Length: 374
Image 1 (cartoon, helix red, strand yellow):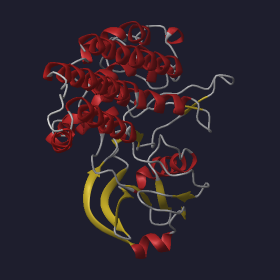
Image 2 (cartoon, one colour):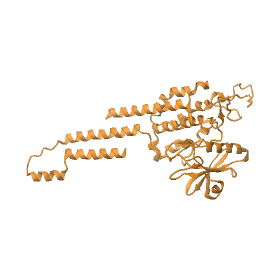
Image 3 (cartoon, one colour):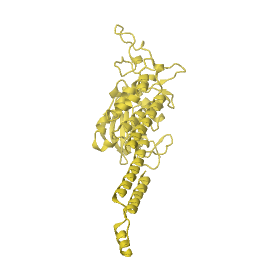
Image 4 (tube, helix red, strand yellow):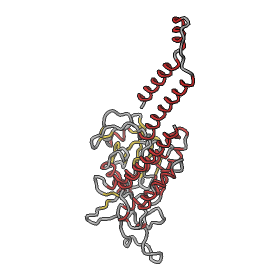
């Protein structure tokens, strides 16, 4: 794009000079001709040419702005399993060992805490990292499950694992200073991020989120369900906002496996769930007169994640100019997500395809309207 703009910039100045003529050159020519008649182009014609060229430049700029995807930080090549690369690192490095975690990582301050682990902002080789420590031995099974998920699911959708030590119950991951998705509105309200606080970028975030759900439903381990999602704030806390405004899943402590072939389904926790955010099949089905009993509670599958997508996406879209138009175009697919019958809900792939179509449609619509104004 920069090369294209530079070329048009050069062309603009070239034509202006050809139309109006350089003052010094014109003076020399007049002196040499000694009064020979000079047919100057009327200023109005030069102005019209200038306006036409500026409109052309604007056309190409808008074409690039609306059609091209938002720029993202250059991604590093895939590292072999058991290795990582982050930031400006040129080479892949093996996951840090217990000894390296003990001697090379400097703990700075606590930045978060959940039921399973405490998270500390730390430093490793002058790089900011996140060090997670087990909160209590009672939660060790969940902690180790989350570690196993991190090790197995490493991809662009999952926070980068840097090392771990089962002896010390510690996990080291990449640090993302923008924090969890819960901070999205606060972050986008900062003046330095106003340029990305648009419906285009917000819809891209929603697409990132649905892509993560699709990845979990088709993971190397099989169909995984995001169980730590009993309400919107809890769900948002499971994901991190990266510096290039994409999303990675961070908390993998509660990812049970569904196997439709063996009819193995899941239950998220052992307590009764309430509210409209969770899927209907997650609610106690036997009425208020029958006390909740986990043994009697029916199990369910990954379609509970689909039910929650409209609510998460609506949060991500926010209330910026154009977001309501996006919601209008997503109405039908979101209505299907809220089907009372789980089997009738679309897959994450189908939702992602619809989001992609809507993004392209609205970009082309906005650009066409702008072209007509030129």
